Length: 255
Image 1 (cartoon, helix red, strand yellow):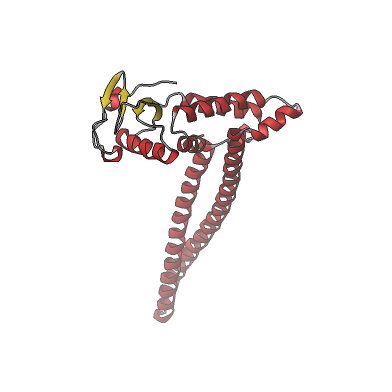
Image 2: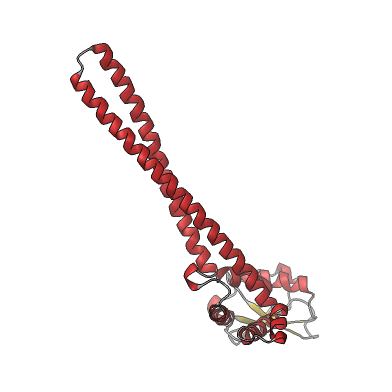
């Protein structure tokens, strides 16, 4: 779910964006359990469901790929463990032979052979450790893949009840986003909204939704509302030059 949520965060900058996607979520939840032709067509047209399907399919494909890679690594690890066991047995046999042989030349040959076997055994042992680390890393990625989508146990992205649960969770998270009121002199273009949003989120270190209103009496800058308190930045010459500390504890939550 985190991957879906982060993608939505990137799209939602204003209160209008938030309301649009909340509407898409409500529409999607209603359409999931309908099978009539009109509803099926609306499901295809619902942007959120389309994006959800795409992300969940990618997540499921990634999970399957990671599972195959994990199985392959575990098989390689088992083979290495067998080889390490064989080399250990060889060392034991060599040591037993050394006890029985008194000829110095033959003993030197056995000592050299023992050293070669031990060197190979250590290399194999190191490879086993590397495989164990790789398997642990893959298990971590698998958990992340399941966190971002559906686990194999849940039945994948096709089950509507699972999708509905995810949509409800997304709705819950979106409604937690703090809403900041902002008054400026003009209706900003999309790139201006992006710039303002980035500046505020960088200062607050969290996701924020802008509820933008216009006030022709504001010549430059902006006026912000935080927790019922207004911060007047209208005396600033340029909005992108503002450098203040916004009190994080005064963020107001809203819908």
